[in-house]
Image (tube, rainbow, N blue to C red; front, side, top):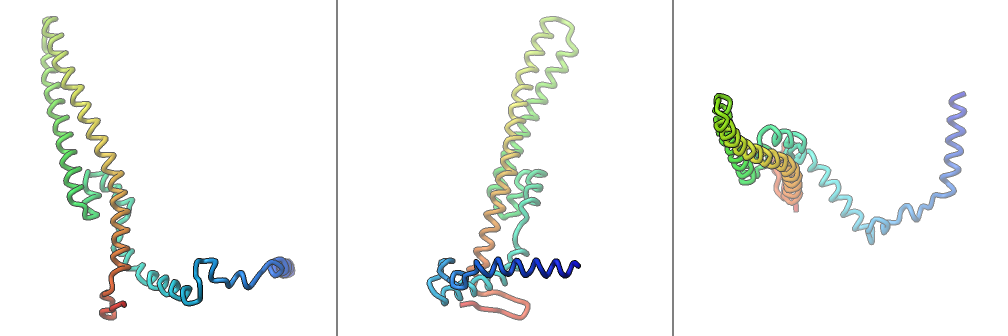
Length: 188
């Protein structure tokens, strides 16, 4: 019974498609932007060449997700992985400066806060509280800036990884001499 239903469906679909199928429109090379058969053949050859280069590209490309995770763990690591050493060093340096400055102000605020907790005189309490409050707010500002730089670092690592992969692909396509398992090949 299933075979009969399948046969009927095939016959009906063949009748529907045969009425609308135009072989001239199907085989017309100009619908893809080719003016003649030679252009179509050139495109096909280039497509086959690029398909042969894909395994080489897959070996050399960097994963966007992995580089984003690297950047999330350590600022600049995603840039170092894509050979953007200057950007990675700048981001890492800025992050160290911002976090270090935040820590210095936080430490200063905590020293004043300890004096505030130990004081008994109302004048000293107000004085040490004010002295602790200013550096604490400054520490929070620098910590917020460090968080902003860290987030930008992740975003930029994604952008730079995509650029790196594009450059790798362009280098592979434009490279005329390649070392293969069977020897050296030269493309003209």
